[in-house]
Length: 273
Image 1 (cartoon, rainbow, N blue to C red):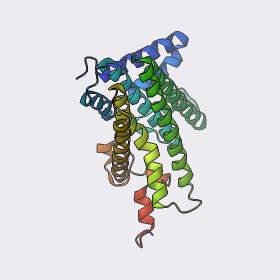
Image 2: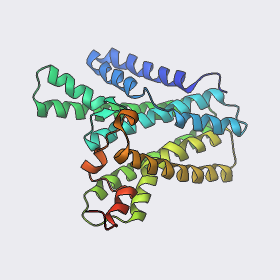
Image 3: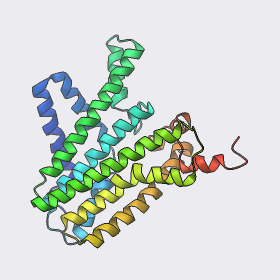
């Protein structure tokens, strides 16, 4: 067990950001309020994977593990905020997300629908950017030895690149210019979800515990497999799930023509039409 929980570390990160924002402009602080709301209600399995891997491998950097776990959770918040902007969604976990909140605020202030929508998208992009920057800063200042911190930053950098590649592929494949293969769809989901949600926290926990390279690499492989399994279930929920229980839209994947393995497979069957 860690003496400082990842939730406590995350709360400090958000409070620090809001204090800086408040000193800049009270309107800017509203972005951090929205960020704090966006980070509520998650399952917190990413920081749990990190701290569990660290503890199981005999790690002694409990405080640093809590900080880096909070950074992983904040990274996740950044990605879901940006993902909602990309998909044009205004709900997350059954309530208004960042872009939806700022859109509705603008509408209440008398803005037209188009301007309000643009304001919401702007808020979502900026809030996600702020969360990304805060997450990387948290890793850089986590208190681990310098060589460990550098290895952690390399892991975060690789995860950012991989996830961005997967997000771009998700949109590119949804244009359906050419038929998407099951291999392409699975590769996209591995990049978009597995890298930062499973491989990153498991490997970061290993690095903090000073595990050998082979162990760290094997945890990355396990994380990628777990991530694909998680995303396949999430795809099922995204079409057949109850939005009241899942907090997810059951039409978004269909509306945006997502090329998930579920839909790629369905298209290959006689029942597709």
